[in-house]
Amino acid sequence: MASVGDTRPQLRLVSPTASRELALLAAIVVVSIVFATASPYFLTVNNLVQTMRAGLELSIVSAGMTLVIIMGGIDVSVGGIVAVSAIVIGKAYQAGLPVYIVTPLGLMAGTALGAFNGFVTAKLKVPPIIATLGSMYIFSAIMFIVIGGAWISGLPGTLSPLVNGWVGILPASALVIAVVYLIAWIILRKLPFGNHIYAIGCNEQSARLVGINVDRTKIMTYALLGFLAGVAALLYVARLRNVEINIGTTIALEAIAATILGGTNIRGGVGSLLGTLLGVAFIRIMQNGLVLTGVSSLWETVIIGSLLIVVLTADALRNRNNPRAL
Image 1 (cartoon, one colour):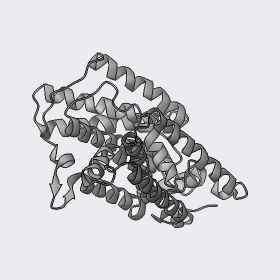
Image 2 (cartoon, one colour):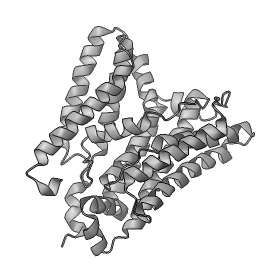
Image 3 (tube, one colour):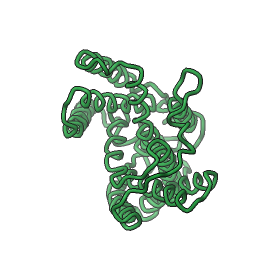
């Protein structure tokens, strides 16, 4: 019978996905050279900083998505969670509430919606892809009902320094990303909760047999993703000072893509936060480079989808003779 201790080797941040991370890093270097050759604006400090700021929300959501996928779950509704949280924030600002009330409202909204997904998955035993697909439609409907197809604009920039500010020579957004990933790493590497996430992803039945409260762990992990979606919504509002009607429409696909490209196994049990961060960087660099070189934005989704197919096919071929890895 498997034990919780059996999953401890999976708790390394780099290994066993180091080869994927190195390959992804090499790909980032190659595409950066290509885009730098094609556009004189690509390697400017301003463009690189703006690219990082544009990837801030995706980076934060992807950290939570990594935990969920390591656990063997998935959440395609996270874009809806970001949207609903942003609407709560926008409406709270319009009502004249101060930032110290607006902030927890946005975070609580995201956490509650994430916990709802976890409850449906854990307690009602609905497969994660079905549960979160249903939630995606529910959250999208809520968004359209509340804002009625119009933008929420003219919001205060109280939290803008977290996105657009600088701390010495470093962009504040870089420090925000670093803090989020450090906390996520501590959860996975240093806390029993992180060990439980890996254990469930490796073998849920074995995790139950050794005494792990699987349902509670699932709900908490989805709630944590929802909380991070709430953080992303706060930063989105701080960055743009409005809530657009199409907010969050692509972030779920991009977060899943970044997580899988970074080496997290779609079946659970193996994952890398460093790989996820590299995946986010690769996606945003590709998008920025395509814009600068005049390529239609429609190709962004084609490229991301194609990369996912290639990576998942390669994983399946590599693991075909390794049932434990599957």
